[in-house]
Length: 320
Ligand SMILES: [Zn+2]
View 1: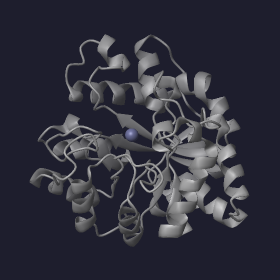
View 2 (view 1 turned 90 degrees about the vertical axis):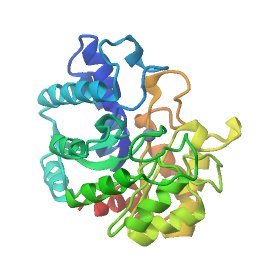
View 3 (view 1 turned 60 degrees about the vertical axis):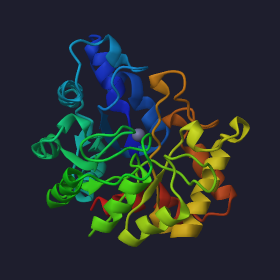
View 4 (view 1 turned 30 degrees about the vertical axis):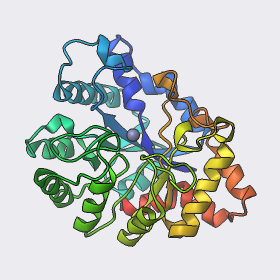
């Protein structure tokens, strides 16, 4: 069984519910999750992208990040109320209980905090919503920090440092997957517990800013955190011919070599439902195909024990 540490399914939930649909997870996604062996996942609330190529451009009134966050939270709550088979959890213990009852379980995350503006009370709001994981930015620059799409060197703002401390006070994990390099270093310096990169690969194999250098992998290891393997084609390899499940397995092997296998996890970031440009690597088109990655991990010589750690144990350890 697999724990997927980063899923954007709430994007599809919001889009479809705003178009009048209901029971979105059950009708459109549950079979594929079960087929892929997913026992639990992190559902992220991605609110930072204003219009552009997303469905938000057709939704009124959603002029601000705060509007989008409020709408996404409302849609998520309505959807969860229709899912007796899904448990929203905050700890690995709660997850284990849900699993023993035969339920799928989900932790919640906030992917980008532009919506809170300069009001750190927004972090308490995210926590009250149920978020256990928080990312200061998506790829944008905001009041707290700069994302991977901005100036690579600028660090956290003073407010961003306070935000990280507030998250830790509330028991939320800081997720650096979308931060620029400067912000990454600042979060590591502030850390007094595990820092995670929920959905990022290795720059050594695919040199994009959303992936991590070997030094960054080691820095996460030193906090006791984990890095989640991401299927997004452009984060797997620069050459389209090598954007495959097999190449993603090489990322896993590289991470295991640099950090130790106990820091390698899954954060698949399947986004095929967002349309063209969001494809997973070949063999990992959607979550029904997750086992193809584990086939290649076995081919590369990883033991059953190592695969089990990557599949679920490592991520759940930091969510204890
Ligand atoms: Zn992301």
